[in-house]
Image 1 (cartoon, rainbow, N blue to C red):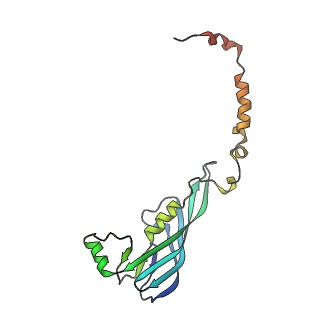
Image 2 (image 1 turned 180 degrees about the vertical axis):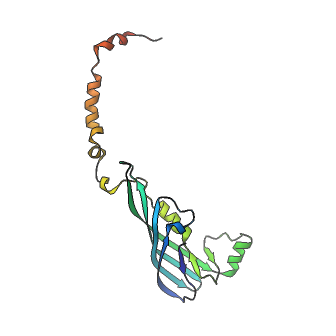
Length: 175
């Protein structure tokens, strides 16, 4: 779990770090391996907590061009804010009437849990097009010259030459 310790901290700004194994994160996506590292700052003003930082994790991806597996470090910017208010916390638990967008925690909580936010931000930071680093600056023709468009045009010209044995089939009319 990606948790930031807050118990006993006074108003101010603090550097925070967390290292969590991917296996400890519930419902984590299978692409991610190793540890999730989070580094950032925690700002406390009264009962308001604001956390901003960067989460990093290694993802094992399959290249769309070569189908080779490769590892890539995925980074996600995390911004989280919450309010410590017992009345709103119990209202939210009891009747689920609190409809604000502000995250609410109990005033006596020891940690702020960033697990869900980190998991979601890392997921949307995965690249849509997964290309291994050794193929990133190359065209398809450079990687697979045997399937290049130029070579295929030459093959098509050879295919357009009709074998004399098939000329009789051209005259068949299907009605």
